[in-house]
Image (spheres, rainbow, N blue to C red):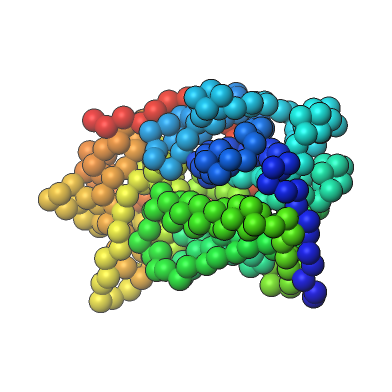
Length: 357
């Protein structure tokens, strides 16, 4: 594999279109303005498709509403049906856009838009390529990874497979990290890499890009909490606990069942024991503590649940759960959670907010 040189427009003629949503996008837009680049044009999906994010993330420090941001900063914002629509491509060309930058975009870019902008269609990806393809934040928690990374790369027809411009990684023990903490680290790494990209672009208009070794890629699909976030009580303890962290707040929470009632496990931790439970007892509530926590038997230890959600209310486990009853997830639900996926633009908005009793 041989490195290649790619020529970018000079700073005074560069016109960015930022495609996607979220805080990394708004932060990059601010960088462009602060470094005297032309004001970027923003493109995102229809506002109605942002409702799930508005609901889950509106009070989250890792989130910034792109519609409010555009209005405050007087930036042009286009709500599109599809980034690949020819009419949108023509509109962007008419506005002298010559660099497309994808940031947390939910669209797959096709060849016509890549060709229309002379291959200057770029993505910043929250993982260290080529290994970390697809959805990274969830998989890092679920798989117990020991490093986080970010990559800026050219977009190709294969997802997250284009030539690499810049990348960075950080070795870190994330065994107790929430999705929020990991997101914060990735945002900070992204900020540093985007600053490096703009600095290089400001000093010269040619950058080196490196082809990826496709054989090293590991692709992880985007999970959808309401479809994929169910607990299998036959899993090892660390896998159950990581599932709870991956799908915990600000997401709706990892789900299971109690007396035919669906509940969500919001917070829990692991407790070691000096013996093994027989499979007959997996998921069994073996103790309700004086603090109101529930201790659950698993293959290799106790899961101590400290907070659950039931009927839209966040409560102590002791307010609902009783020993020695059992938590379970039906096999058909688990199989569906394991094999099915849903494109992010098809994720339904959430219509009710959990409350604390």
